[in-house]
Length: 93
Ligand SMILES: [Zn+2]
Image (cartoon, rainbow, N blue to C red):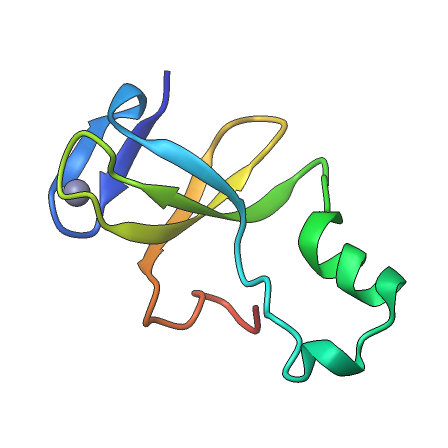
């Protein structure tokens, strides 16, 4: 079980949260200019690394706010938690 440090509520049990998938997915600026393949990539294709991964989480049974978590998918170690309006610690998203 993970202990996730909500930026607003503090450390809480994983069962209070819902993972929203990969973080920092950007909508194409001109969707009408995208090919079907580019649009499908935006909608459906996500990375699935073994190791550090940035994800969106929501505190479903708490403050209901979204934030980002960088965690290791192999060890479950959480390296950082940061708000949506903050830059990822350690570099570019
Ligand atoms: Zn919270």
